[in-house]
Length: 123
Image (tube, rainbow, N blue to C red; front, side, top):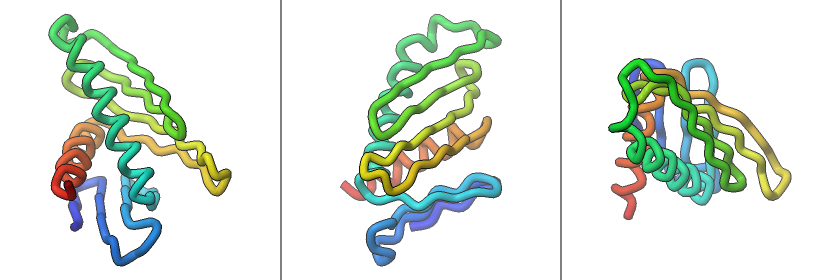
């Protein structure tokens, strides 16, 4: 399964073995294991829930910052209630690799919804 849009790409290919998910934004990409992809998906849902709780109380031009940490991930949402970016830090618990990624506006919203659809299609 491939979702390819301007500025980003999302790929699921179980034939690749251990690192079967690829997320690519602008000039970088990262491959994730299924368990890493699931933990990312779960964290995206949690930060989206936090946003939905406060969204109706925010003015359109009001800036927001939400942070969430659940090892191995740290995630930070910044922007306004209808347009935001996401920054991630991944610290491997196996001490095999660590990385950071950034999804700018409007890629962050689009990629979030595509990851949600991709995970739900696998269940």
